[in-house]
Length: 400
Image (cartoon, rainbow, N blue to C red; front, side):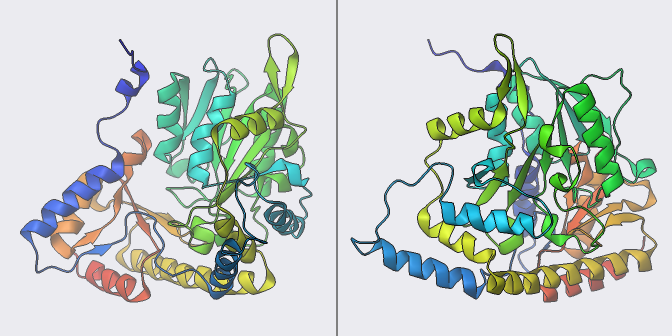
C-alpha cells in the first residue's frame, strides 16, 4: 500500500485560477458573441525582445555544431548568466558572489522548492492577502502558518509583529502580488532588523522589481544593510522580459546566511540549496540561459524597458479610471497590479460575476488571495493597450 501525504488533502479543492477559468468557459459557451477582455491572470502579452531572440538563435546554431554543442550544464546555471546577474545587482550597489546566484526555471518553482531545505517544524509567517503558492506549499509540508494582517489601514504593507511572535520563516513580496504595494527602505530595514534579532529567515519575492518607478524604493532586499544574514531573494524574468512561457528565474542565497542544525548548531543554507538543486534539478536549458543573459545586456535592458513602460502606461490608465469612478485602490504606480476595493460593499466573487456579465471583463477576486482579500479585486496591466483602453471604456459605463 502506497500511503499519501495527507497534507495535500488540506488544500482547497479548486485553485484560484482554475475556478476563474471554469467561470470563463461557462460564460463564453453561453455568450459566444461577446468579446471577453482578460485582466485577471498576470500573463504578459508582448513578445520577447530582439536582443533575447538573437541570443537564442545563436545558441540554437551552437547546439547544432559538434564544437559548440552543450549537454548537461551546471545545475546552478552557467557562469555567463551568473556574471550578468552579478553586474545587474552591482549597478544598484549590491555585491554578490557568483556562487550565491542559482538559476532556475522561475521564481514560483524556487519559492515552492526552497522549503525542502527547512524543517517542517518551522513556524511560517505569511501576509494575508498573499500569492497562493506561499500558503499551499507550506500546507503540503504540514507547517504551522501564522498570518500577518495586510489591510487598508497599513496600506497593505504589514510591519513586524511584536517580539512575542516567533516565526522561523517570513514571506515578503515587494512589489506585492496581489496588492501592488511596495515597501520603502525604512520599512524593509525594520523587517531585516526583526529577522536578525529573532533568527528568522525572510523569503523575499522580488519578481516585480523591474516595475518600480520611484528610484528611492528598494528593488532588492539586499539593498538593506544586514539582509545577507537573514534573507533569500527570488526573482524572475517572466514579467521582466516576457519569459512566462520560456521559463527562467534566479534565487540569491547569501553564503553568510545560516540555519540551525540540532547536531552542528549552524549550517550554511547556501550549501544546502546547492545540494538540493544538484540532486533534484538538471538546470535551465542552455538556449534559455543565453536568452536570459541577453536581457541584462545594455541592448536588452533598453528593449525590455520599452515593454515595462508599455505595461506601466496600461496601469496608469486603469488607475485613472478608478479615480474617475471614485473607487479606492492601491498599486499601479510602482507595480503592474491595481488592487481595488469592490464598490458598494460587494463581495469579491460577486464583483467578479458582475464585471463578467455586465461588461465581459475578467479580473481576479481578492478573496482568492486570503481572508483579508475579501471585498477587494485585482486588475493587471499586462494586456494589450487596445484591450486595456476598451476595458476601461466599458468600466466607465457601469453604474457604481
